[in-house]
Amino acid sequence: MTRDIRQPAGLCAALMAAALCATSWSGVAAAQTYDLTMSVITAPGDGYSILTASVPERVAKATDGKVKVTVSDSLVPPAQIATAVREGRVDMSAALHTYLAADEPRMGIFNLPGLINDIKEYKQVCDAFWCEDTRKIWKDKWNAIVLAEGAWCTQQLFSKDPIHKLEDFKGKRLRVHNPQTAEVVNALGGKPVAMPTTEIFPALERGVIDGLFISTCVGGALEFWRIAKNVQNWSLGPVNGWAILVNPDSWQKLPPDVQEQVQGAMEALQQEAFGNYDVFVDNAKQEMEKKGVTFWVAPEAERAKLMQKQYIGPSYDAWNKRAQQVGFDGPAYLERIRKVLGKTANN
Figure 1 (cartoon, helix red, strand yellow):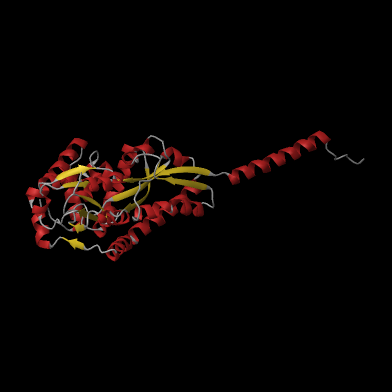
Figure 2 (figure 1 turned 180 degrees about the vertical axis):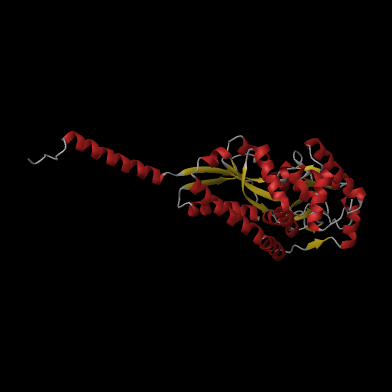
């Protein structure tokens, strides 16, 4: 007797439906995409803006289009760019350490006069221990994961009148962006003023301020030199860092393999940020020089006067006081930095 191996029609239909269903779900899983919003601040011309603007393309390419990043400079105010990640208002941001230095002094080590003077020294300290330290601080205090590090173009002092001697600082109202430089300006007899970048140009026009400290690249692109024609390098807080952050909850929504792809793209961005740093600065200077801007660098003799305890001491004192309030040994931390750089205390 031959056994009938035909299946009931209902069973066949069910099996076919299950197969189609499985195929359908597989297609959905394969096609799943992730949308992330990223907040940045307005910084035309700087490597910061050039590199952060490239994040969507870099991430899309690395993930084969699975992750879409939308970058905007109007999502949150600049002062809230880090807290917005912590609160989940945005998935990502490119935050400035300097904006947080009053709250967490370790975020402002590069603003202490004479401590870190160029991008090479910044990178030395970053690689030695500081970037790892700040990654923990970002996580603990701002609930943020660091994906990449970078730095602003060298800071310049743009001013209406020349400031070529210490005496020239007296009475000048100067926009500053960190508490350490504010202490120095105050000790020199000047008047430090905190002010967002968007308010600087009208403030210069109305005489509210006499000058400002700002990135070479941003100062050039926003043409502050049209009013503040003197562009000077006093090496006060010359290098300022930034970091691309992501909210942990947003990060965990990405599958592990996609996380690795995004991280790889961000590591490449970081290499470019430091590798092309001098290129960004030089390009900005050349563009301003074409328009008649002359750059002035404080001579060693004048810099030596600036580095006297009476002028830079208050900056270090305030930093160490805040360190004690936060709960860490400020002098020991500074000594650790100096050891990396082969320097001795000069205040």
